[in-house]
Amino acid sequence: VESGAAVKAERLIGELDIVAALSAADADAAAYTDLQRTWKDKEMSPEEKALIEATALSVPVSLLEMCHRYIMAIGAFLPDCNPNITSDAKVGIHQLAGAARAAYQTVLVNSPPQEEKDRLKAILLEIAHVEVGLLELGD
Image (cartoon, rainbow, N blue to C red; front, top):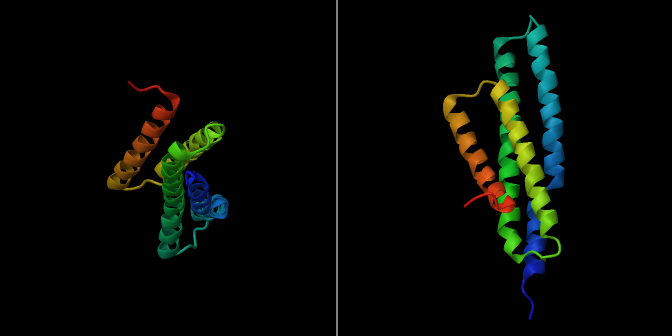
């Protein structure tokens, strides 16, 4: 009897968009380059500076949110995953969790409003809960 795991795996592969993840890394590098200009360009208009600063904040926020979505998707797939490869899926979760934490550090440098920090902290706590479960560190 087919378990349906192959169909779920195909669906998961469709959700984990590596191109989007790589594009987010490129966008982060570009946003940082632009942000550096705001420190040096004394002729820059306040509007352009504000736009660059907003982008420098939004890029790592989007990356953190993407990592969270991917972690939750992989976590939802784990019960259907072939037992011989669950460690690969778990490693992916841990790598994405590290990327989410790194993105959060970048967010903090860009001085987000407190409510945004609180929202992102809640996401990080949810990610941490997933990791604690995978590592069997909880009660």
